[in-house]
Image (cartoon, rainbow, N blue to C red; front, side, top):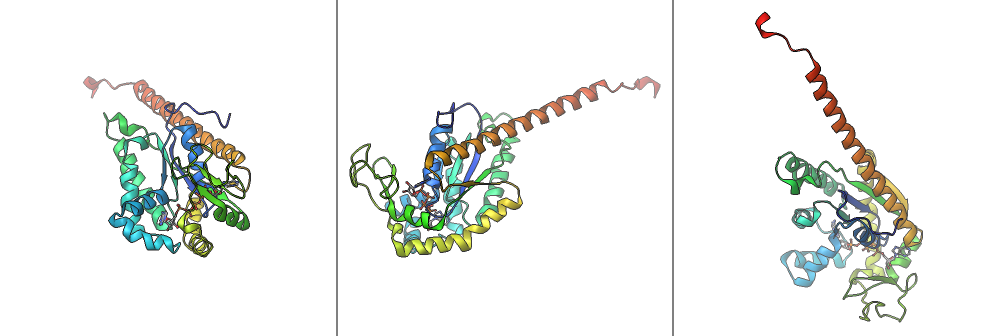
Length: 277
Ligand code: AP5
């Protein structure tokens, strides 16, 4: 069933990329994937906000850019994403929420996965690296109507303690402005003000839409109607990830079968008697 947790160590899921405009539900769905498949969520927005809150060098550079709703320069993103993807918990897979966001970032990610995952997996005797072996990303695009996006962004509230998301128009808390789980006062994101939202949607149109084209050409893009209740969207996404995982395992088995057949064929070739040469 879609919402029953999967065995978190059962199989390798590989990279899952959630694409979509601000408010499409990437964060909401990423959390469902985390719960179900036991892989970590890597939200570049959360990583940046954490850097801003800690006042790091990156945070200081990113703060004003994010406040205007613009994208942080690619070169600043590569370092934090690379660091996070190298962490141990990413070995069975991970869900990327908010990255890649430009065609250049998509190209960088492909090169990173090729070098750091595929190359490492060729080295024998390192089982930790085998996990993400030969797992091309599954790229899921969340499609949502523009007016619905505005409702989602202007109504979004989050719990500063547990991170749970609410929406005052669409999924309100039981008590106004308080988290259902721990009673904390809900907060509004700095960039969810109307004037900033316009800039974020503009940045999406001009810089992030080409990312979908990048993956479409590679036949890796699967679009989902995300203008539906959260659970329906989740069920579609789980179906896509499950099919992707099964297809890959079937391919792996076929490759192994072919290798065994090739080896058997080689064994069955009559050996020439060297003395007759
Ligand atoms: P980031 O934090 O990634 O924000 P975003 O992409 O604008 O996306 P959001 O988090 O606003 O929306 P979401 O799709 O996650 O929707 P959510 O699930 O929250 O980026 C912030 C900034 O950081 C950027 O502007 C940029 O400056 C910078 N940045 C980040 N990554 C970068 C990168 N790679 N390169 C350069 N700069 C980068 O849902 C929204 C609301 O809708 C919630 O209230 C939720 O409850 C509700 N909702 C969700 N799904 C549904 C549904 N199906 N039905 C009804 N309501 C729903």
